[in-house]
Image (cartoon, rainbow, N blue to C red; front, side):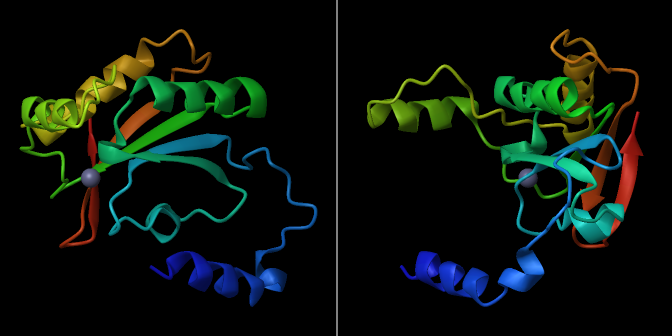
Length: 162
Ligand SMILES: [Zn+2]
C-alpha cells in the first residue's frame, strides 16, 4: 500500500497551489453540504462551488446521522452557515443493502456499535427522511433552508427531491 506516500508526495509538489493565505474558515456562501462519500460525486463542479465557499460533510449514503448533525451544528453555530444541501445519488452502495446482515457481520467480529448501516430500499424516501430529521433538529438554529438533491452518476444530472 503506497497511497499514503504518494499522497504526501503529491501535496509536497503542490504547496503553492494548496496554500490559502488569508482565506477565512467561515464558508463564504454560508452553506453546508451533506453528501454521500461515493467516488463519482465531485461536489465542486457539480454545485458550482469553490474552496472557501462551503462546508462539506460526507458519509456513507449522505445520511443525516447523529455525527452529520454534530458537524452541521458546528457549521451553523460556530461558523455561521444558514443553509443545508443534502446530496444522495442513484446507484448508492446502501441502496438495497441489509442493516441486519451488516450488523451480523459486525457482531461476528465482536463489534456491536450503537449505529446502524442506514441501508434503504427507496432512495427518494430515504432522502426525505434525512431532510425531515434535519428540519426537526434543534441542534441546528437555521432550518428554513434545507434542500435535498439526487445525482445520477450515469447521466450527470441533479434533481431536487421535495
Ligand atoms: Zn452512496
